[in-house]
Length: 477
Image (cartoon, rainbow, N blue to C red; front, side, top):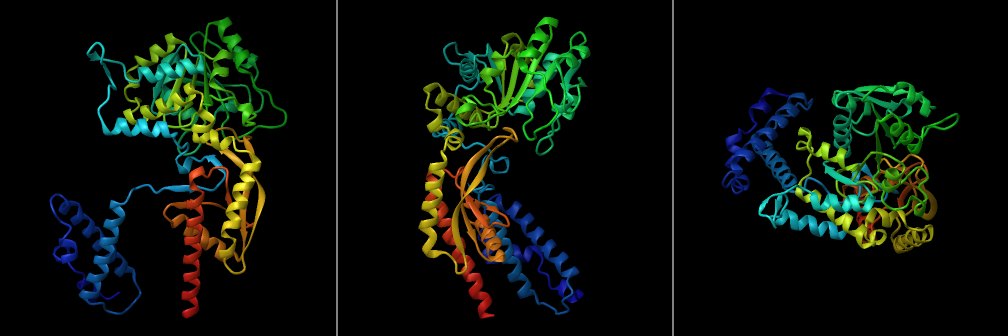
């Protein structure tokens, strides 16, 4: 690119005086808008430097181009940073899509807590400072059968605090087959390392017996068992059960911590989840402390739940790091709302995660077929639709073997058109995340909300309309 063109780049001050931008610069807005303008100018300068186009572009053209970019970036910044997504993947608890959706009661309580002051840390009866989350933790303990409960900001924090508080920098025994790594940066051995405790791996990847733990026990050691949330070991395998580990720990005087992961309170038999157990069952099996997430099968709110022996929970609550891990008032209100639905006994209908897990194949079939028939008349030329059997995933660390039978509305057609349509669906408002494979473009209906079917149909129609416009544009050229 010619240096002449770079000289035509308008200065930041000139752009700030442009009437279309100057109109937006009131108050403190000018500061960040100036930085936005500078960034746009820098980006265009770099683009021009690397361009092979020899043409010289005058200042007016460059100014118009920059104003367009600046106004578009401003609009994008003022829009919500997160876009609503219709989950048509068939993964009920989808980590990338925000995991569990909240019950309406939880949403109402979250909004009230956000909008107004509340007695978060005040005893209104006594007029003195109170304990954060006490009422919510009482509900959690009552529902699960634990002596006491503590709520922190996520399960990694719950596990860290439990290990550090119980082991005190000593040895933590964990089966080699349970040293898990999950999405993002959660690697269990690194979490334990950060507690200052010594991780002692016992047994082998595929076989760990109670005797393996017994041989590794030393005074003060803590036994940790972890639910394998995202992989399955098959074949010649053996794992020590919670009851067996509990018997060992009670006999030898050691603490047993179980990281249950998903936080299931409802019976897994209802949803045919073979590798799951409820928190109540884990406590009854003898775990001294159970940790789990609030935004997976529990049903809402990114939180770490610790339930178990009152003396241990009290110790964790008094730990200096408990403050660093504390939960904010809005999420605490969400957890309160979810727990209340369980207390009422209305969780299957009212907690979206459980509602979606509970859907029958017949219901999924009806939904997928009705949607296909509704859209059939507008199907792009050369496309066809059908309803196929699918495998829905529970997701969210609920176990790799937690697969549910589902139904999927599948479209077949030219591969480039299917891929373009999938992109247009993701760009829409709300966005739609579907399934695409060699079979075609599919909408799995299990994780789609009851109130999202009409929105989903509208999103598909909009994507098809844009696809048709694209094709018409290519024809014109």
